[in-house]
Amino acid sequence: GAGVSQSPRYKVAKRGQDVALRCDPISGHVSLFWYQQALGQGPEFLTYFQNEAQLDKSGLPSDRFFAERPEGSVSTLKIQRTQQEDSAVYLCASSLGDWPLIYSNQPQHFGDGTRLSIL
Amino acid sequence: EDKVVQSPLSLVVHEGDTVTLNCSYEVTNFRSLLWYKQEKKAPTFLFMLTSSGIEKKSGRLSSILDKKELFSILNITATQTGDSAVYLCAVAGSQGNLIFGKGTKLSVKP
Image 1 (cartoon, rainbow over the protein chains, first blue to last red):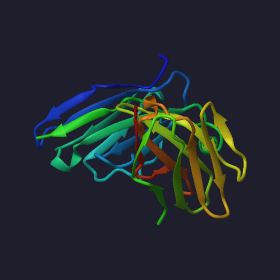
Image 2 (tube, each protein chain N blue to C red; image 1 turned 120 degrees about the vertical axis):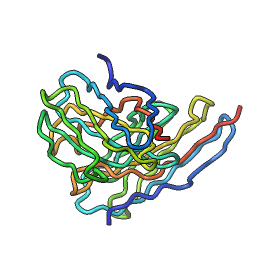
Image 3 (tube, each protein chain N blue to C red; image 1 turned 90 degrees about the vertical axis):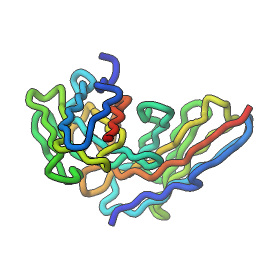
C-alpha cells in the first residue's frame, strides 16, 4: 500500500481482556517501530524490529506487552490482561533503512494509529 | 536521561503571521533530529536534520539545527489555517530509538 496501515482504528476493551493491534508497514520497509502516545504527549518508543528480528524492546512497559513480526512484514502488538493505564493511541512506523541508517537519512513514516480505550 | 523539550507548548496566531517553534535536547550520542506534523491522525514527516547550520526548506516551512547549543527551530512563514496542528520534534540518540518532545500545538485563526 501507499502508507503504513493500522487496524483496528479504534478498540474498546474491558479491563482484563487481551487485545491485538495490527500494523502493515510500507512494502519493502525493513524497519518497524511501535510507539504509545498518551493524550497531550509525544509518542513514546515501545519496540523496534529489523525484518523479523526484534532488536530493541526496552520501551515495553511490562511483560503484558508482546510484539511480533514473524515474516518480516506485518507486525502485531499484543497486550494481555489490559489495564486502564494502557488506554492510549498506539502508533506504528516503518522505515526503508536499517540500523543505523534509520537515524541518519531514512525517516520513519507513521500510520494513523489505533486508539485503545480500556473500560 | 535523554530528553527533548519543545516550546511553546501552544501558540495561537492569525493567518499570514510567521511563527518559530523551538526544540532543545539533551541526548547521548546525537544522531539526528526530526520534525513531524500531527493533525488528527498520523504524524507526517517534515524534516530530518543531521548537520549544524544547514537550513532545510520546504515551501513555507524551514528548519535549522545547532548542535553546539543543542537546539533546532522550525519556522513557518505566511501561516494558513491548514498549518494548524501539533508539531513534534524527535531526536535519535544512542539508545537506538526516537525520543519525542510533547509537541507544540499551533492554532492559526482566519
